[in-house]
Length: 299
Image (cartoon, rainbow, N blue to C red; front, side, top):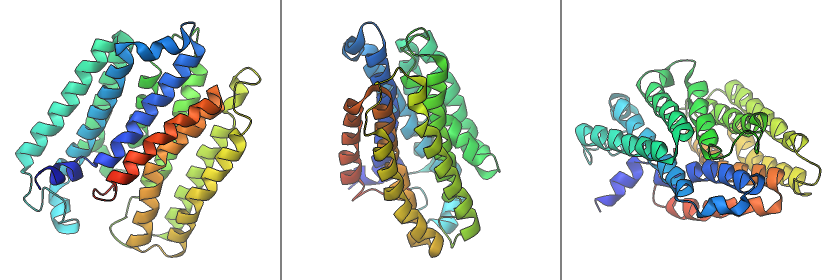
């Protein structure tokens, strides 16, 4: 089936994590701006969702394009080394998706367009050069940081304070540093010491998330927020601890899959800590991600 190689090339289940980032921003914007939920009826909101999805898929395609020689040795079952998709086709697809997403951000507005341009540059920089350097996890985190800010780009600073925007984006960014560090050597037996360091970064993200309600008026956050955050830490921790104890590729990759898809839950919990229990609706994005994940790999 020809569609399956393209779905695998784009890591299709993971695109819902990009939608969750934007959903977090839109939910906060809808709750904290004078027009409130009216923002969700504007075409601009859907431009942002589409733009983020296209740019995320572009990043996945370009990742495999620039890693095609390495993948031929270490991951020969991926679509490009298997000959299912040619490098030229992958490059054209990746740049087309990136360009389409960038156009949509500018159609949304100047602030969104500037953030979209920065995100496009960060995606290219990561894939072309930075991912194979010590700055790889940070450059990947920058992409997510900008994606969350893109979701918040419809809100003026008078309505959603800039420090709240940076705080929310920072939690996601630090979480992604931990995930990316955890995944650095997923194709072979990992170093438990480095996995522990990555787990420490993930704990740091959780602690930073716990402080989100301190920037808000009393009563804004869900009363269940700290318990939801604790439950999420336990849910992720079971896989992470297993991988640290036995860092074989199968265990590490299982942990990474859970960590990647659970970014949806991170965004949902952050939303609950910002606008109340209604923010948990973002968790529904996990359903299509998990269903697609049965046929398409996430890492």
